[in-house]
Image (cartoon, rainbow, N blue to C red; front, side):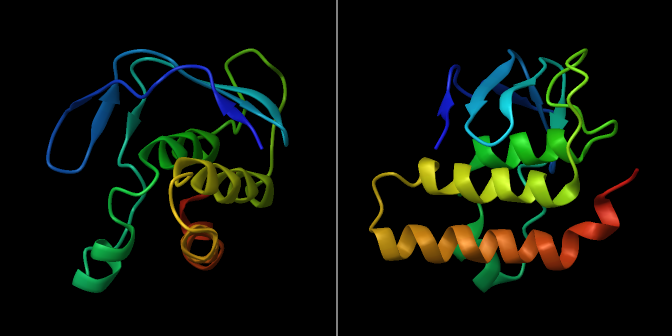
Length: 132
């Protein structure tokens, strides 16, 4: 498992987007340091606004979803100038691990089901958002 070195600090831009006010820094056991720069715009994961889906996953792991949005953003580099590029499968693996960390206070079963569900969602629906 990894660890956040900073907290999530954002300002709402509009109904669906937030802008980072400070860098979000995460040390991943999978890919090393990830730095999402201040000014990056995220939607905290495109959870469908269907009532059940949003009640189950909306607002879960905003930090994880921000990291995932960053990793899906070309050129898919862990941070500007790192020259460490990742593929879609690895970006989704990072999301799954960080979701579990963000839910540290949850029961193991709940944490695992939520992390797996969000991971499965991006594996099934994320390809249209991944641009090489």
